[in-house]
Image (cartoon, rainbow, N blue to C red):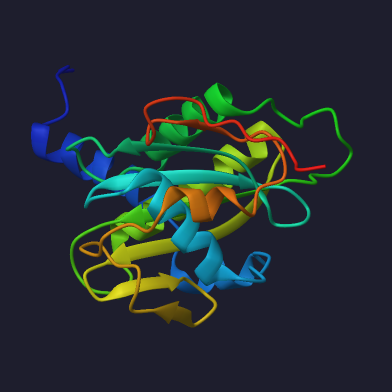
Length: 205
């Protein structure tokens, strides 16, 4: 009887298979019943203005039941093979920094959306599938509804599974005025990663 270690090739194949299992195909994402955004252009423009994402930047945002921004955070994707588990952990860590969990609620009332700025065109990639898997899992662990996955490329933005998108903003366009984005937020907003300090605004009375 002989003993030994699995070859590096076998280990690599096993690792690749695991990563492939932690991603969602477009058909799976569509079948998941992700809630539609009422005004995706407004959401995308607001996040683009606030976080000024460049390629390989992820922006995770939490929306209240009225689709107003409650919190957001941005971070750079690590240079490593796309893995939904790694993406899930990164998203969860940033969600915990900017907003309390809703695990005590019987049903989620807030929704998390993800905007990912990347190179390439609007076609689905395995990296997109890994982000989708990571977003869905992070939402479950933080007591949130899983919302839209949006990509931002040179060609513009698009909401996966909805067939909606636009040419601006895109990964090369100049962000708008932050004051305009804040004008529609009637309560305190917590952000991290994409802005130098916490942004606070109270409703006009």
